[in-house]
Image (cartoon, rainbow, N blue to C red; front, side, top):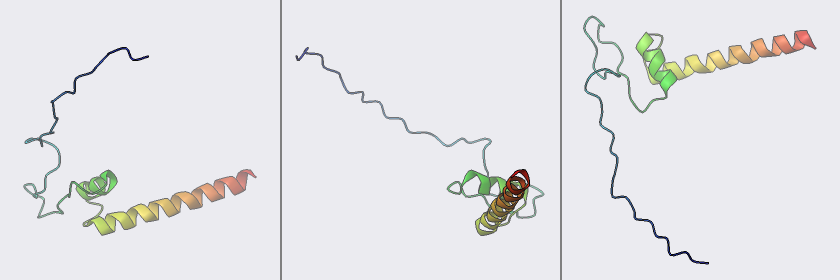
Length: 84
């Protein structure tokens, strides 16, 4: 049942380049007063909280996210208990 079809392996390798302009900055911008630096390895929500100024470190951003989750669970509980 061999049909004799062979495929060649591509030698192309993709290496993404980091953008020079735009994106996240690891150094504080002008007028930011030495704000927090954003690590590209952090989750996107942690990066967003730090860029917006809600958190000054990844640990505080994680704590904010945990509080938001707890509030959402409490709201869900009250809504479900009201309906049933």
